[in-house]
Length: 242
Length: 242
Image (tube, rainbow over all chains, first blue to last red; front, side):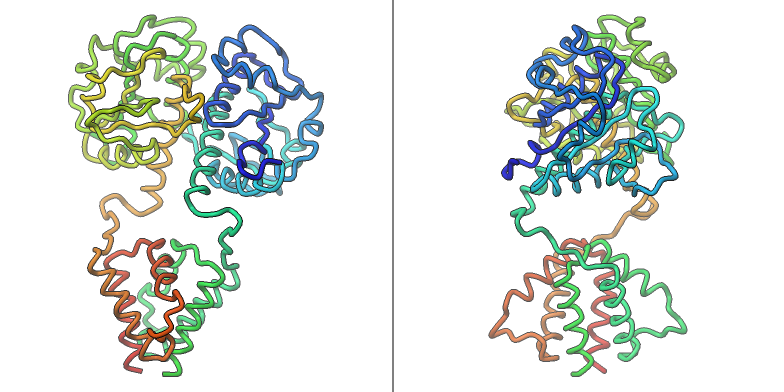
């Protein structure tokens, strides 16, 4: 476990990749983004000259790839796995964007092993394989042609992991992550705000004029923390008393 | 000029690409992200079977690529060109991240032709070529190996263009861009807020306890609009009167 660099705790798992060129290009994509741990589940051709050629100067990542017989073997010891998928599914696993998934993976990888899992070029991941993961992540692609090349998808996810790691570093020490307010806390604040504005004569519920939706949009953009909700409600209480 | 879809006004220019596989893979990268306009400046091999194979089902984008003899020809009619480069340079053109560049390109492409320019696989862009562009954009890569494959870099930039276009759409119609409050308006709001909290007995300027910095941080994250500042100050006035 490397607590200084979350990227070192992230495995990129290619499940049943068919083309060795994609394996090599994925190794290169990893290395350019500061990732190094490639897992290959039942690759059709590995090692292979085509993979070495496409890896360019990332042959170290390619040569140290860990070959597994099953996805379970590749995920052994992993606490937070994300299924990378081109399409939405009717499935119990929650679905998020690649950008959001990268943030969650990097946050988890501060303290635990994490993994991104990619399916093969033709069939992607089965429902059973997705169900082994916490989240499904998708790249918002064009509706009429959403089929990214496997290594290109690996490059985009690796890039988002690096961007998330950089932004965490720039955003302050990871030991004190932001404590976002819960849904109930946020709703409690909106009720309190509305009530206080009605009492002050600023808001007429008979003629709402989109005031509350506007205020909701403003505070939603701020992504309120627990303590901030407490401060704001303290201010509202003091106004009511004065 | 397509005012509904900025992505239609963006050219992706490959300047002197060597490997036909990268040309084909770039065509695929474009199509998956809703882009369609590929310009090839003096490609070494085009058309080519390898390009067609790597383009997969994006052969329409590949086949309609415009081949030019010079970069100037590819940039004819372009108002906003960005040079995509792996490395920083001592040069007059300002340098930004791929993400920031994508936002600026999509904003410019609402009303004008825009272009991203990529150099060849070995040498990138010359200083003279970069000087034809408004910005240099770089993907924040690992310092010890920053050499993305050309088509992988095209995929990352195309992805960021699509994300920027989606986020513009989600943020409201482009005809009504957000009217952010000015520095003076924001400061006027903070003064008003502080004064009202002092009168209500919530805030003691003798013992400030970081209250104002915390509130500033909260509202800074929301990036207040002019009208929102007016609403918030209206609320503060009503609380004072009640």
